[in-house]
Each structure stands twice: as C-alpha cells, then as structure tokens.
Image 1 (tube, rainbow, N blue to C red):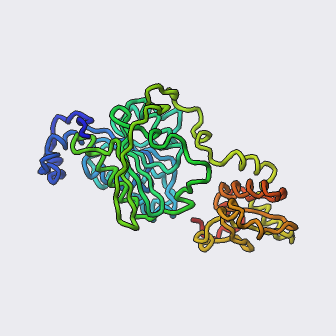
Image 2: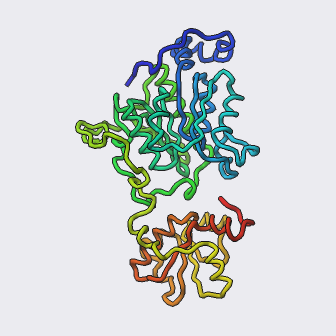
Image 3: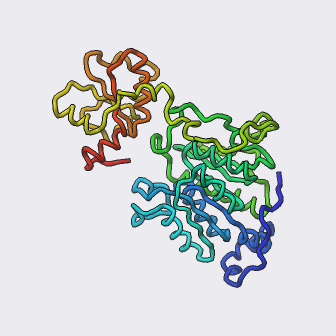
Length: 393
C-alpha cells in the first residue's frame, strides 16, 4: 500500500548537501524532492542499543535533518558485540551521548537532540510530539506497548523491530492506515515465556539486518516512496537466510485502535501490565529470598546447601558460582528435574538476575519444597558483591 509523504520538503539543498547525497539524488524515486523531505524530517530513535545503533548511523548518513536519541543507559562492555555505534573508549559513558558523538562524525549536517532519560508515562507524549516518525529499538515488552499506545494516541507512525538469537522481525505500525502493535500482539506473553537478549543472546550482525530494514522503511515513509510494511510483518531467519512476509490485519476489536476502543489513555503501569514475573513467583519469593552475601555466609559456615543454577548450559559454561549444580528452569517447570532435588538439604536457586529463579522457586513451592529459597539478583549480584574477578555477561 503506497502512502503519501510523511513530511513536506525543505526549501532547498545546499551545495554541500548536494555533494554528500548525490547518490540519492540520482535515484529517480528519491531525487532532489525526496532528499529535501529527508532534510526536513524529524525522527526519534527509541534506544541507542542493538537496533538503535545501525538505525541512527544510517538515518544520519541518509540525511534525516533532525535525529532524536532517547536512552538512559550507559555503555557496557557486553554491548560492544552488537551495538556498533559505541566503541571501547565509550564504556561507562551515556549511550545517548556516545551515539550522538558517532552520528556527528558520520554527518555533521544532522541536528541531534539528546533525551538522556528513561521513557515513561510522564514524558512519552511530550517527547513523541516533537517528531514526525518513531523508530522503536526497545528490548522489553513494557516499553514496546507504551511506545505503541503513545504513537496511536498521537497519530504517529512508527517502525518496529525485534531480535532474538538468530531471528528478527520488523513492521510499520500506523493506526491511521493499518494495524497497531496490539492488533498483532493483543497481550504480552506470560512472564518468563520469552527470554530477553540478556538471557538468551543475540547474534550481533542480526542487529544490522533488522536495523537496516527499519531505516529503509523510515525513508520510504518520509519520502512517500515504495510500499511500507504497513499491515505486513517481515520475519527473518538468519540461520536459514530466509525472509517471509506475514499479512497483519487491523483488528476491529483492538482495545486501542479498534471500532470501540477501551484503552483511551496511557496505562498507569506498563511494567505491571506486562508482568516481569508471574503472580505465583511474586508470592513464592516472599520470605524466601536471600542475598548473594548471605549465600556466601552459608557456604563459609558449612551449611548443607544444595545450590541450583537454573540458567541454560551455555550460560553455565561462561561463569558459575562454586558448588552450583546446573538444572535449567525448563526442567524444573516441567517436573522432569524434581526427582533430582534432595528433600533433606537447603535448596537455593539462582539464575542471572533473579527472574528465572523466582519462577522456578514457585514451581518448587508448589511441588512441596517449602523451605527452598532463591538468590536476589542472581549471579550478577554474586559477581558484584562476592567475587568481582568473575566475568559478567
């Protein structure tokens, strides 16, 4: 479905701009008119991480006049495997500031607006209102739903992307012309069902594959060329090297953009809506949570602890707490591993950050292991509080 250009063209291109963008200008579908539209465009990139890195770099190179960057995080060494907008010297630096520096180096003609803050219910409307188009590079469901809801309520189109291990997805959501994210995913997945990239990993180059698709869609929308991915979901499998498109229809019963919407404002709490952990896990951890320091004290005192690492084998191979036994969370939830657990020892569960171990703890409590506990903050807390020599990931 062809759509009209999202922005009006700028008055002119300077001599420097004509030199820089000459390879665009000689494309008939872009030309001087299309480049003027890019120059006049204001695009916000939500996140300067895996998807935000290639998106910001190519948006800048393409000549998008104003680029907004919103990210409250700092650069970590584990980011460098895929977040190519940052370098070794940026570790510890604000991601927004680091990304802005790289963008300036790529194209000094671009105006950069930095939002070094967390996107939340209080600021999302004001920030989004300043831009023509949103590029969503977020990595959690709570923010994805908030981005979608704010875009629909403000009448803004946005380009969405998602990555996990070897798989990527991309689409354009614009309620005025097609479905919104809630039409595709009316409800978030159950807590713990879909691991994050921090838990499951992501092939670094996949970020470039999906991020470049997002930029391609952004350019098409801004200049009014081609057929944007409105009403279509692009699914990419890097291992199979296959792309396929799935038609996504606007849901007339959508609570946000349907015929009789019931969601007419931003939700009070998107974290609660998406549920970081299940209600069962929330109940299980009450009075059954210890710190990494307490676990170390138990070990030093000779307490008979059966320490269970509920992460995946690949994570266990990277780093482990001394004395831990690997029993992946899935084996506990399925009941397959319950016979391996002793009834006469203190069971302590841990994962990377505490989310998966909380879910496993709930399963153990339901199976009769009433005295089991889990480690708050998981192995990351152990590294920070007990043994900083171990590698974090």
